Image (cartoon, rainbow, N blue to C red; front, top):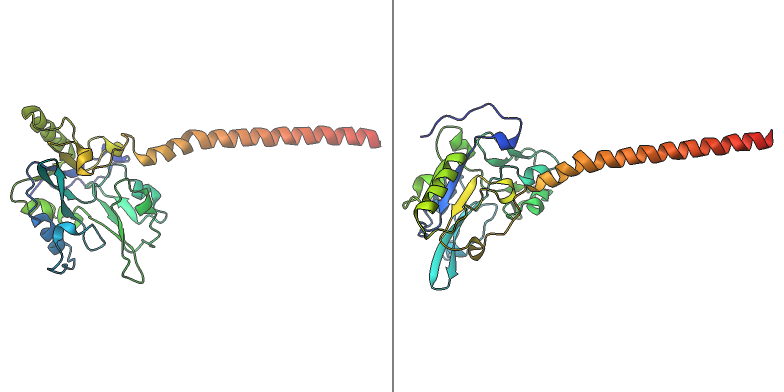
Length: 267
């Protein structure tokens, strides 16, 4: 049980005192408990027992999984799911408002609005949203950070079952403090919290003892992708409109002068 959620929604996503999860790669043993818990909590179908779980990619019925990474003589297990960005590109790209950022920090899909355009799949820097290829009226699906549980004051299913405490749930600000506390107290950790600043910050954070690029994490800029278009519309578009008005005004005055000269000649 954790503190009740503040229902007052801030005007900007940067102000969100949102929830998140800190995943410590050094503690994960690849047991797959989080995978099973996610399936149960979201009523998702279970795959055939003949298919190795670790070989399965994310899908519209598989919101998270733990993947094995070999780095030299080391093996590491990495839990992957939606990163729940602070300023989500998928939300900015959605043309019908089906993708939304909630006050909890979770980024979710409104199934009643989604038209299956898949713009969110293209926009996501982590390539997380998945399309329901097996359905006629298909939409996009992904991890919701167990929003229905959060709204009841219960932590996400995956975090609640981790036997090694590799997943820690809490307020994002506090998780960042905890991440740096562990890093500063143990030399084995890489001096970086993945998700603290990538694409403007994410609600899912990672710490590791091996470089993140070797674990398959993409190297991304610190600015959020929607901020690019925001600046474009804020500065470039008004400039273009102003230039357009000046050009049209100049053309109008030039034509007026020509018309005056023509009238003088014909008179």
